[in-house]
Image (cartoon, rainbow, N blue to C red; front, side, top):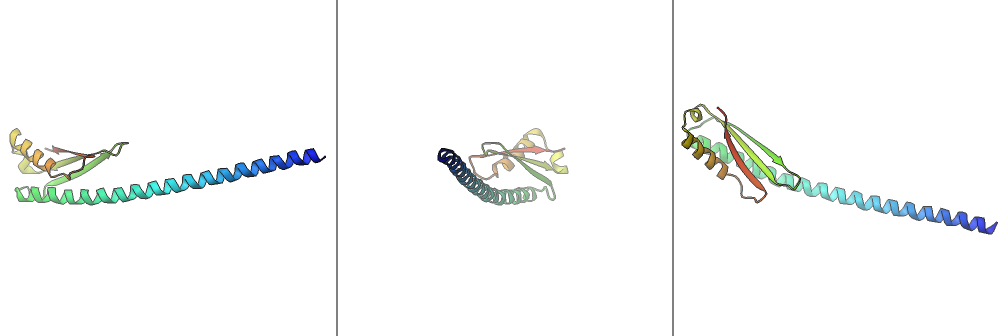
Length: 128
């Protein structure tokens, strides 16, 4: 009878230990996920500020060069490694009248306005 109770007690103790270990693993994993989400949120806020500033710089460039009220659309793609590719699409009637060399110069200058970050690249497209 005592050996049955000992076996039962050992099983109960084993299940209790396994349960405690499972709870500890869940708590540690949950805290890691929360920390990761907080870091991602801070990084997104950082890039959102840079992106907003970049849009204003493009707008200023376009206005200063006679393309007032130009259509400007900035999109981004973030890959799994965190690299960001920005595509700037510009539209203005005056851009339609530029030759290829002049268009290339505008696209180059707008791309160069991009913020200096090794994880970011910029492309400019003229929409006609």
